[in-house]
Image (cartoon, rainbow, N blue to C red; front, side):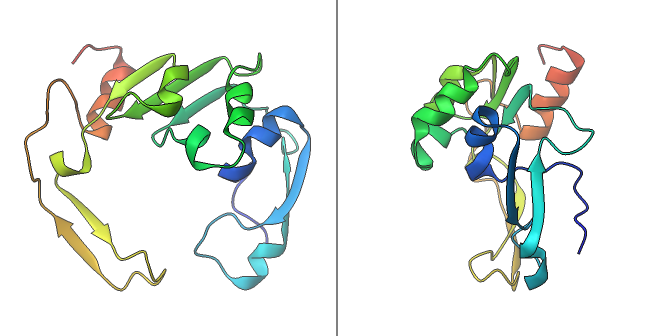
Length: 154
């Protein structure tokens, strides 16, 4: 089965790809996939694609949530990485390496939808009501990105 992705790197291989490119592995491109998809071969950088020059993250816990966090720190400090953008409600972990940090709302400050991902079957989709008003000068993920893209102070 051919992947729809031109270039794909699993989160657990980003630091290694930055340190040791080219890199090849077998796997799948999503966690909701068919069995045969796990045997696709991927290579970074993919033919005709560029290496990574920018890191954009809204889950900056790579240094504390994955094995060998120091390897990821070294990858972020690589000359290959020209820019790091982080969206996060707290100044923690990888936020310290951001060129720009966008302060976003917590889950409790937004109305949203969610689903039962524990089973991987999406049995239940449900509404999440806003519990509290946003604190200080934080914005939703969408508004913070839109403001940054337009160069606005919002």
